[in-house]
Amino acid sequence: MNADRFEAITAKYSRLRVAVVGDFCLDRYLEIDPARTETSIETGLPVYNVTNVRAQPGGAGTVLNNLIALGVGTIYPVGFAGEDGEGYELCRALAAKPGVRLDHFLQTSERHTFTYCKPLILEPGKSPRELNRLDQKNWTPTPAALSGCLSAAVTAVANAVDALALLGQVDEPETGVLTVGVLATLGTIAREKPQRLILADNRHSLRGFPPVLFKMNAAELAALTGTQPSSAISDIAAVAVGLARQNGRPVFVTLAERGIVGAAPDGQSEHVPSLPVRGEIDIVGAGDSVSANLLAALAARASLREAMELANLAASIVVHQLGTTGSASVEQLRQLGFGGR
Image 1 (cartoon, rainbow, N blue to C red):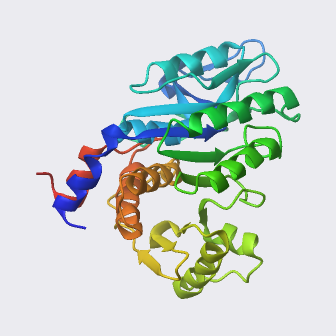
Image 2 (image 1 turned 180 degrees about the vertical axis):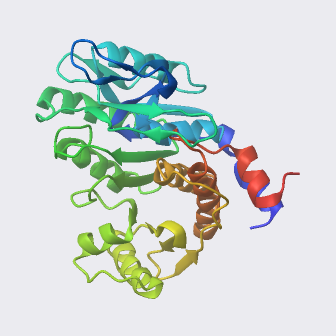
């Protein structure tokens, strides 16, 4: 892809309307100054003093953050938060984002707000160091009535957008947004609106998802297809092509430092290598940046290879952002890929 083609694709982003359907959580960073460490009089244990708290949308919200960084015009989050302090913070953070519409984002007393609390040691001259994370999750099934409301929201938003991103983040099946009922609704949309671009990624497996665009890593691909895991790119591409033919939709397979493989239903496949590492890295959020950039580029009529090239640029930018779940802007992509204009 040359610079002119990059500009032609990214110029369309401001006119895109995208829904992000999935498990939104609150990423809360507790910045700790180790120079202020004390010893508790009561317990004799070290006391970490928090000098700053940062909160931002995480989980599916990380895909949303990357779409915002790309300048996507209108973004509809579809998911839920609890009626708790974390839910207040998450909804406030979402509402403050440019172009975000909360018409289909629900708050409910029947769920906790999914929260990743990340204590972070910050020392001068050193990279941030994360301590044990403190998670707050839902361990019971999503209530049927809430699942029905989410299905109705998905149906409504599908008529208003150019593309949908699906992101499952929960560990226990049926405890998040992408329940069997919601997935069935998405399957109906995929059949009735085959032109609607839908890209799915799930923390553990895409088993049970309707046949839409799939994005996964090589281990997930092997597990989903029941094939022997292989490190050979040609083998991975062949399995991805088989799955793309079966679904009638493209399949993307991320290979960490080796880049991305993309496969099309017509049997064609592409491999785009990753960019060289330019220093210390933190891989948190890289996969979500890939999902966001693939979706935005394809919605802007990029080819599979062009979309993968842009996704690789974004991932390279994000992995070099330490101590945060990062994102990549069009200007950052331009600078890294084309040296600016």
